[in-house]
Image (cartoon, rainbow, N blue to C red; front, side, top):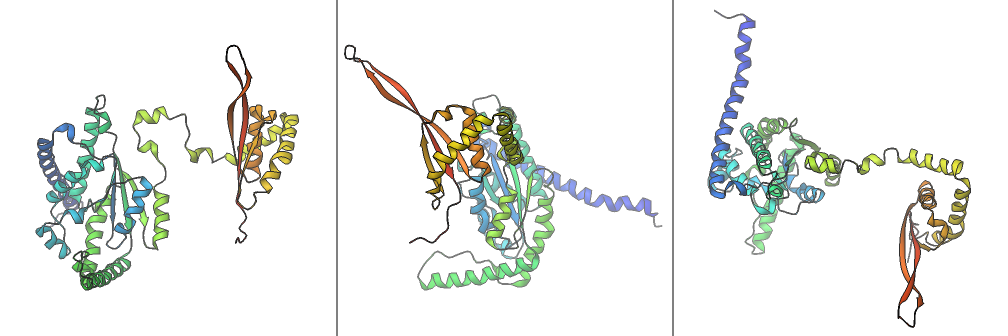
Length: 406
């Protein structure tokens, strides 16, 4: 007897949930086993993981290796990335990789945690190729939970600086299947050519030659494994950590611009909450420029309407004393002017100078330099009395002439 649809449906819907529950249990068993082993070997106070972890994932041929150095530069990371394919270099792992399959989760997690604990990664590291399965996703969540727990545990101790608030970025470089397969096969041809050149030159250093880079069916299978396992695994983290989807279909410079747009300044998500609170009164640059033009116009109008005599003197000073020097530097685009004019003793006059140049398209900066000048020497006591000479150093920058030189 076939049950009615409203009774049969829950059994079908329960299957994915049951599978997910099993994956979570597997992850807990794997992670807890690896963690206990490491903590026993190193001691709890030495379980020090990176402040920032950038999980770099992407389709085969999406350019993870090509763009890693650029991402590290943008984030100010100086250590070498952790590349999972390089960590998994055991004979068993190589056999699995060569056939287009993946290595077991326990081996992956164990190798990864040991690599993350290396001292050179303490400020941050790029992690290429993790997570790739749902079990690895769950292990990542467990790791971040442990990192937060250690931070709470050592928060008010001398070791607190070693257990800072972790920042986790998920960065996915994406290309479609056609582009992925084409890039893999192109890489295979280039690798074979490089190996041949190395052999002719007598070199023993050979680039890695992947069998999947020479067989279109294996290249397609590798892409589909990514879509079916890695892609879903990374998408599941989208609502938990900082997530960056990068269109990597275009040329390198275009991809770099996509990366820059994704990694904009977001300190409130990265700093310790106490630090964020301390800095709350200092706005980030992006905030102060939003209405900068409107505020400039408002200030200039207020100078004319409320401080007309002073504003008139400032404009005359600019036209007579500064502009002649600026005009002589029209090619270089930078002029430095020193002035001792007492008009600039008034802070409002200084503000007017800067605002006038800003409104006219220049970048102006003023630095006050104080110099002690010997003024009187007492022959009886040998005491020297000095006066303070105040010099206003004005820098005006603008786009210089592009005329041909030489």
